Length: 109
Picture 1 (tube, rainbow, N blue to C red):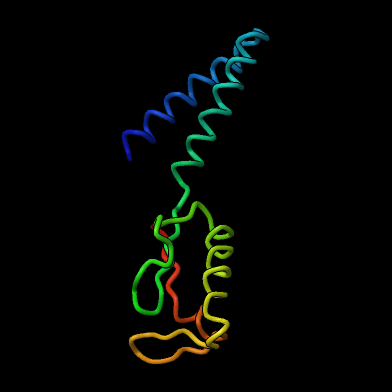
Picture 2: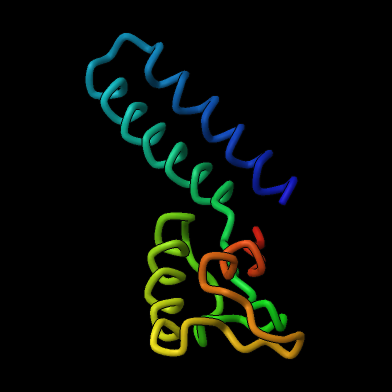
């Protein structure tokens, strides 16, 4: 990861040199490169989220979510499956639905 960050820093320096050149075509090229570099840096910083049930199993067969919002949306739909019985049946006993979220683990990967 350090090598990728070093490379991105070097590319950013090159883009900034183009922007500083004064030539409008080179400025435009530099700004375009800088935008792409910034997007790559943001993607590298993205943390995936995994949700584990109270029993330690992933609640999503696909594993992870790209952001907290998507994870919470999935959790909400998943938890609705237990509304008819009024609780989640854990290996440690029944968990009331209003306590279910606190018994799940939201893990940054």
